[in-house]
Image (cartoon, rainbow, N blue to C red):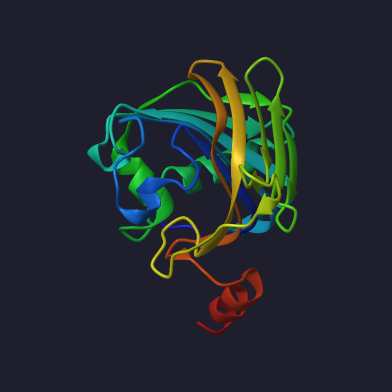
Amino acid sequence: MARDWLIEGKYVEYCSCDLGCPCESMADPTYGHCTGLVGFHIDRGHCDAVDLGDRSVLAAFYFPRAIHHGQGVLHPIIDERATEAQRDALFYILSGADQKVGTMFQIFSQIVETIKDPLFAPILFEWDLEARRARIEVPDVVRAHSEPIRNPVTDAEHRMLTVLPDGWVFHEAENAAGFAKGTGPIRFDLNRRHSSLAHVAWGPQGLVKSYERSAQAAARA
């Protein structure tokens, strides 16, 4: 049975492509494969009556080719503070079950073939969209940070905004230089590769503009 859910918060990604991920412009990955880390911190959210606010979720990933070819490997990492009810709700959302075709978690449910055993651990999640800076850390598993892209001649900070009206992960994101190292089941070592930061709100129908607007629409339904 479909469950009612909505989450809004902070999103960050790291991948092995050069700055400005080509996948977002329908091109192949820079080096043929795609690996890295995605994560989000829920500022506000629920799944039925379960409150999901102030919980973080990460996933290390590997795809041997462009992600639409599938064969993906995923390692989910869930905030250790999540209760059993919250864990159940988060796994329901991550599964893509009962979600519109073409939305984020539904797509990942189709392109990921192997899911490593989930890890429940303390997650450090720092995020500043305006400054284009983020930091993520899970002891002994992953460490990552984002910083502004810099002009190679002047060393001045360079802003690069990605706008995707038909995006399935976000509609607008600040691009950054990403540094990430995975030492868990999925290993990677990324130095000044692509990173994006975005404010997101997701529901069963995909991206929504805000938690408040979606909650009001649900109340009127």
